[in-house]
Every structure is written in structure tokens, then in C-alpha cells.
Image (cartoon, rainbow, N blue to C red):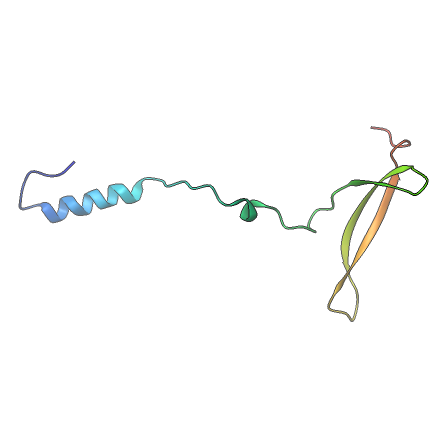
Length: 85
């Protein structure tokens, strides 16, 4: 709302710009920025063996002493048919 007095135009303009700056501006972040980094929490997955049996497993990275690269480790939890939920 513009001011009617000619003497306080600077103050009114400054107040209007503060009003605009105080309004929240929400913009959805792109999907790539909201995605979680991989490798932090192991995700349990289902695999299938050559004989057709399905099993639960998860993978994670471990540090190898003396090497800069990490090694991926796979742990099998158990067969899907034997797991009680």
C-alpha cells in the first residue's frame, strides 16, 4: 500500500521491500537433491538362487586396511520361505 505523503517516500519504499522480503518463498527442490545418499543404511533386498529359492540379503561397503577404495560386502539374512514375519 503506497504512502500518500511525498516526504516519507523513502521510508515507505523501504517498508514495502521489507514486507516482500518477509514473505516465505517455497520452491520444491529437484528430485536429485532430495534423494538419500546410497550406502548409508543397508537396504534389505530379495535375491534368487540358481535352484529357484529366494533369500533376503543386504550389501554394504567396508574399509580395507592399506587401500583407499572400499570393498562391497554381501550378507545373506535367510531364505524367504523360512523367515517368520
